[in-house]
Image (cartoon, rainbow, N blue to C red; front, top):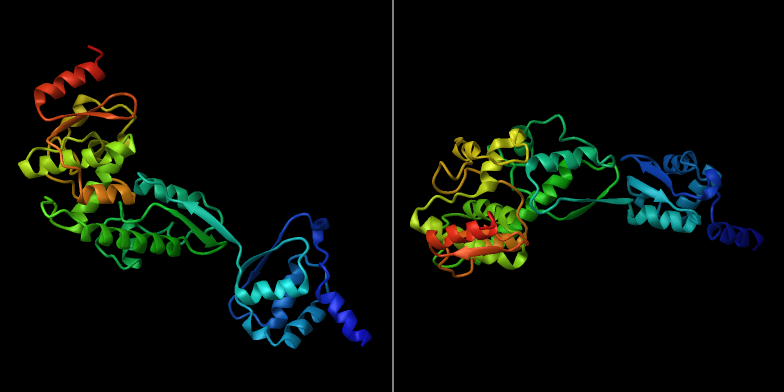
Length: 318
């Protein structure tokens, strides 16, 4: 009876921790680690208890073989009972990384490289090799990952996170394409993704997104050049210094929509859900032009004459 009471007390007693127990301890359990090895790892992480006693608890509980590999945090106040519950449930320490709407692929790569809690498996890979690893050989990575906040276990692979973001974009794009307007000038879901990326970069205020998409749809139908600055900037790549000059508009690249007709060969950024839907179901409009008004909104015009007046008013102050 006394032994049983002592065991009950020990199971419910917070375990002392190194460093006065003011911060959570980090515990990494590698795949294939035995229950005895897990008990030793717990003590090595800074939990001040007897590894033999901890192992005995794992065995007596009948759950010793249910302990899951992973990366865990053991906060102050953790009891042997709570520890085993965490390890059996696989309640790993989670971190989060946000991929922002409108980011391009270079920005995604930089964000992955800066996230110290992710294993940088993608770092040595070329874009081509990475996309092949993700099951998309020959597909450019630009725009293919859905912008969202992704949680991940500390120490997990950045390739696994990218795979989740890739599949999330697949689902969002498929759902948007299924809702496309009957008169859309777009020929495929890939074209919708590319147009959505342009809409994402051109939209200063959410309320204008549908009309901006409508302008580009009108231009595609009529065979007009899209003439959208973000595609030119994208084509300039690292050479863009923040100033878009007339000569840049005249410098031909595959993404320069001032020199080439139709959509560019790839998206130019990661579009969010709203831009995907706007691209496939734009607002009906007669407008063929728009210009930024300086307050985040745009002025839309059906004719070049009206557009020029709007440019003079909002861009040149005339």
